Image (cartoon, rainbow, N blue to C red; front, side, top):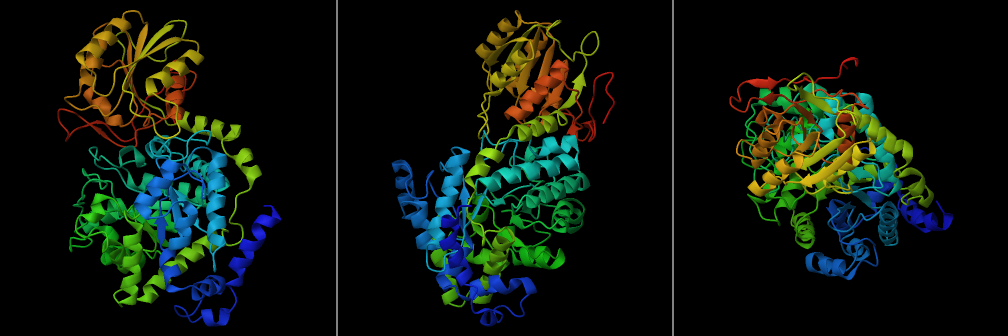
Length: 609
C-alpha cells in the first residue's frame, strides 16, 4: 500500500486506542485481544454507535462522482448524493454492493469504489473503516461478474461432493473479493433444501442431506476466511423447507424442534465449529422455536436463545435485507430495526429507508427501550470482526493485486475443473443403447434449443448461445435457437423443423412443471427421431417431467462455467462424475423417489467417483 494513502487513516484509527484503561469498563472484563476494540468503542458517540450497526446500499460506481442517475436515486431514497455523503451523514459501519446499484462494473472500478468509501469514512473525526459486503454465492447469485472468476453454485458443489473443491472455491473467491475491497461475503447458504418446491433456495443449497451439506458449508467457510474474507452462513434457523419466497411473503417452517435439530441445525453447527465470522437470519416463522408469531430475525428466543445460548455462537449476526416482505409483514419499518437489535442481532442489512431506521434505533436508545449496553455489544462484535479482517490496519486495496489476482488463469482453470466434477448424468437411454457421448464425427450438426432465462450477473448468456459456442469450440457445427421458458406452439414448430437438419438436439430446460410447454417441446423433438439430450439449467427435478428424453444432465445453473462443463461432458472430453445431492420424486406419484440422492451415471471406461 502506498504510504501516503495509509498514513492519515491509520493514525485516525490508532488514535482512538488511547485511554485503554477506561475502555475496559465497557461491557465488563475485557478479553486480552479486546483492548483496542473496546477503546474504539469508548471513544464513539451514541450516533456513531448507531451508524456502526447498519449495512447500507448506495447507488453509483464511485464514492464521490457517481453518474447523475445514481445521484438522483441516492437523493430520492437516502437524501444524500454519494457514498461519501452517506458515510458522513450516517456513519454506517457497512455498505453492501449490488449489480443493480451500479456498484460492480469491473474489478478496478470496484476497488476504486471501495477505496473511496474508506477514504470518506476514515477522514471523519474518529473515522473507522467500513466493512464492505456483497452476495457472491456463485451459481445463480453473484454480484461481481466476469472477469472475476465465477464458480458453480452450491447444489452443483453438492453434486461434486468434494470438501477440497468447496474449500478451494472459498479460498480463490475470497482472494478476489478481498483484492477488490470486499471483506464480508454473504455465503455460503447453509439451508438444507428438502422441499423441491422451494422457490427461493433450491440450487442455492448444497442439497437435502444435512451431514453432506454441513461438510461443504464448513469447508467453504474455512476457504473464505483463510483468504481474509468473512463468510456468512445463512439463513438461520433454516430456509430449506418452504414454498414461500421471503422476499415477497412470510414463510412458515413447520418442522418440530426434533426435526430442526436433525435437519436444519446441522450445517449451522458445523459452520460455527469452523469459526464462521457471521450468520444471517432468515425472515421466516418457525413456531416450534418461537410460537410468538415473530419472524426469526426479530425473535429473541431464536437469535439469543437458540443461536447464542444453545449453539454457543458469539460472532456477528446479520439480518437478511430489511426491505423483504418476510420481515415487514407484522411490524412497520420503524419498529423492525429496534426489534432486531433487541432480539440479539448485530448488523442491520439494507433497511428500505435508512433515515427512518437509523433514527428509530437512536431514539430507542435515548428513550430507554433499547439498552445502550445491547447496542455496545453489537458494535463491539462488529469492531472485533473488522480487526480480525485487518481493516483497522490495512483498509485499502492494493492496485497491483487487482490485476494480479482477479480472474487469473489458474483461478478460471480451477473453476472449470470443479464444474466438470459436478455435471450429473441422470438418464442415458437411446433406442439402440446409450446416447452419450456425442462426437463431431458421428453427430457433426447440433441444434441447441430451449430456455434462455436472464443470465446471472457477469455471465455472457443466453444459455443456448453459450452451449452452442462451446460445442463449436469442441468441433461441432452448432446452431442456437431460443424457444424460451414457455415456448409457443409456433416456437415448438420452428424447433421441430430445425431439428430435421440436425444430427442431434440439445435442449436446455428450466424448472419444468406438469403443464409447462417445455414438456411439449421435448416430446415433439423426441418424436422427430433425432437423439435428444436435455440439460436442466436450474433444478434437477426437471427430469421427472421428461420421461421420453434420450439423455438428461443436471447442470444446476446457467452460468457459463457450468454450461461449458456440460458441453464437454456431452462431447465426451470430460466424464460425468456428479451425483444427485437431492432426491428426484416421480411426477405422477410424489411419494415415490424416481432417482435417489447419490444417483449418477458415467461413461464406460470411467470409474465411478
